[in-house]
Length: 91
Image: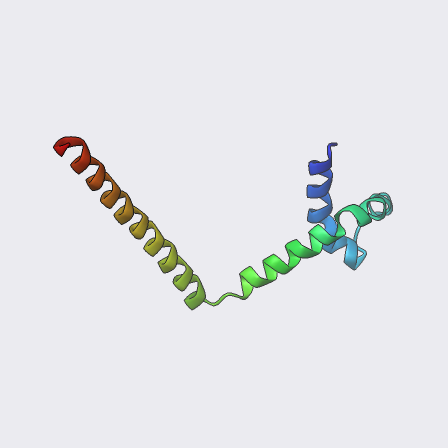
């Protein structure tokens, strides 16, 4: 296994590792790789908690913000295209 695969496996099994619900051989493997990947697993846990703690209103607000940014970027693209066409056709 390469490092990315090991990290992915560690992160997936981390919660079970903390609760002690893994087999003996898996526990040994997790202990061997704990120093390398523990901080990433804990960070991923925090991200999941934050994601699940968002209310529907927060999710809606995020979605509206993304739609606004998309519309603003299209508007800017239209303005730039208009300027380019004006320069191209009239000069």
